[in-house]
Image 1 (cartoon, rainbow, N blue to C red):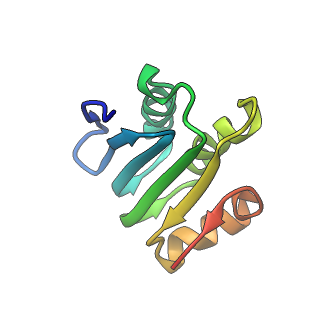
Image 2: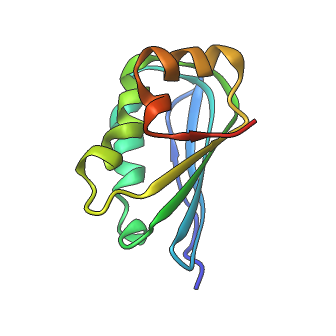
Length: 114
């Protein structure tokens, strides 16, 4: 069963969108410059009721130009607070975004693919 996409506009420079939820798997996409003021919006999207029971998340970061540490921590929160925590797969992260994920320790919790 697929849920209706949940999209949250983070302003003119960033965007987070829940693309699909199906059979215990969710796909989310972020884009633009994702900075501190977007952390709350990311957390709201990740805690959306349609994500209850999801055991695998795919985060598409291919259109993210910049990700700051605050938002990287917001992406990790479900891994720290979830019981059991979901598997989170990151796809398409640019070098600059990967650097932030590395510096925040997120790469130890997330499965990062090219």
